[in-house]
Length: 491
Image 1: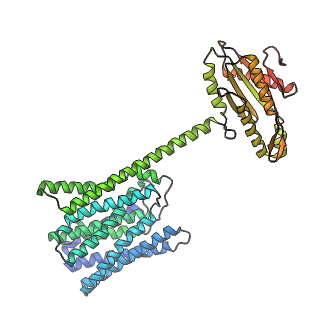
Image 2: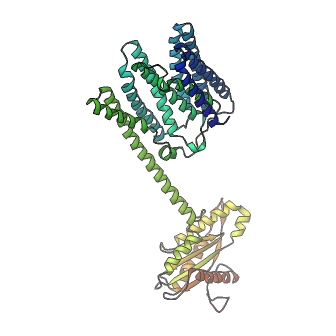
């Protein structure tokens, strides 16, 4: 059965039960609700127990299913005891109520175990959320239910069960606020909805007792049935583990504002009470102050989370930009970055520039003999030597393989030729690679562009590349200038 169909069937059953309650005598109405809830709880307990025995599931998930099974078992037994108490043995109502309290305490544990496992600031945020929501919900419960109860054992029991339900409903609400609705409901999310329904129903029933209304009034009869049905439906669903975007959903998720609703409702009730009576009870005031303090702390932690996300995003953008414009092995600017920066330099038409194309000599034997890892180490050493032999204003790039491009500005032809020769001399020095002495050389082709002359970096590099091939053809280890009328250039 599909999830929507199952939930729709539960709503129909709950509505039918609510309609039947006024037509039935008091014990029969209680008995009908208890029987349905006991059956639904037993069904849920059986399926949760089966899932808890799944060997392939993670330990935390199996523990969540186990707590769900215990909660549903306690809930089913409590309703069976209360059913027996209504029909024949009233003395069983007390242990039945105690078991229902145990079930209400176990449900939030199952929801937390099945939910997203958070760390650091995110975990602290969740704890503060639960505490703030608990304070606001307890303020509402105090205003509408607890303040009107008579003292003694009845009030003590009511305060205890309300406190348990408040914590459970707060955990459920915070769990739903961390959800991604577009991914479909999971077991712990539907169980959280069931916990909210159960808590709301108990508070309505207690309120009806305060005002003297029948216990099933205002949807209380339907609430018990619908909560039990939702619990049974949740037992047939799977627990989905969180993805990498869980922290983002805590801040930007579509349901991230759910924890604020009880706080806003409590403030509205306090304002209404102030307008009507001109005073507020001390309990309500202190609960609201505590909730607001926690909300402020929560917002501060949210700012920290957003700040960390922003810093991480900027670091990631910077890393991606560096990867897009630099060679991954040597760290030198790549071809794209070289062309971009060289174009900016050539835009200053009054500047003399010289382009160099350098190709290593003797590099292939190193690769073939010592392996590609040794070849990579040679390239790193070559890049470091070339960078050490150039000025900070000069532009050095690895074009790919063992080919490097250099652009130097504000320099004459003689100085450029001397600089090229110094680079070759540096390269010729032996280097130790994997414990072996290795010597590589290079051939350099140069092309010169005077300030005021028209030319682009593409044409300048092509001329330098032609001169570099001329240097290799002349015996390698040489520097050659580009000569437009002759392939064999002069030194």
